Image 1 (cartoon, rainbow, N blue to C red):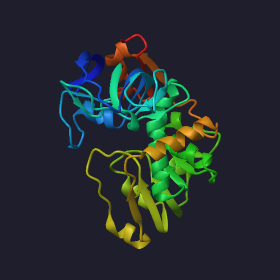
Image 2 (image 1 turned 60 degrees about the horizontal axis):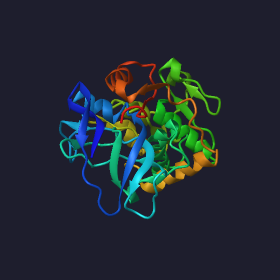
Image 3 (image 1 turned 180 degrees about the vertical axis):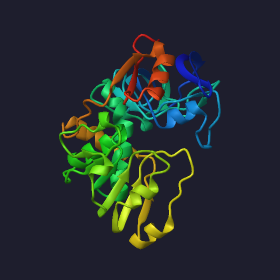
Image 4 (image 1 turned 30 degrees about the horizontal axis):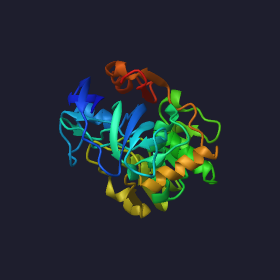
Length: 308
């Protein structure tokens, strides 16, 4: 089998190419992909050539871990053809690397890596970031302050409220991202508080630590939920005076994906208004360039319906 896939041949080079797939084995399913999201964090770093070294890192590679589709064939009794699933990346290509391997028209994956969905709507590509947000909340507790109101920050705030916690305050520099009816979104200069017990940084800004620590209460906890391409550092005395705790939220677990899926199904968590741009996968080069260079593109999703 072959799949049409997004291939990063080297930094700043994106193309669509047919790539051979591995043969499905016992426990595998073949997924016909409906939509994939473009990550403005990890995929931007791959595009820039700034991704830190990870196992499997190297070019050419297929990116993507925000994939939804339907089962086309199954070698596992837990899933049947036609079932809608979320695919958190795949390692199924023969001639290119898979980091993270989800941006393609067809995928082969172990069934136990997939999460069953009610449907394969484009909004469900957001489950990866929603699971990341949920994991950050689990790691550090419900935040009183969130730094950054991009996709991840908005999902941290929405999930915090959906779980029955008090609405958090959000700091955001960009005026176009300071909209919300469910919780306050402020320019940092409009907020005089420096006694937040729990802060989640969702900005991905490698220079954020000193600013975030200055907002902590004594004994407060800062959870880092973004992905940082450069070395992080901070001034020790302010952190020492606060007895600050710094925690890193690792990648989500399967339980996080299932929890946020269930919150969406129960209509406790809305994913509306987050996706701002939708392109056909056949226009992937233009879509990736816009996603990485246009500040008004909050979230880009590709439709693979005509790319078989």
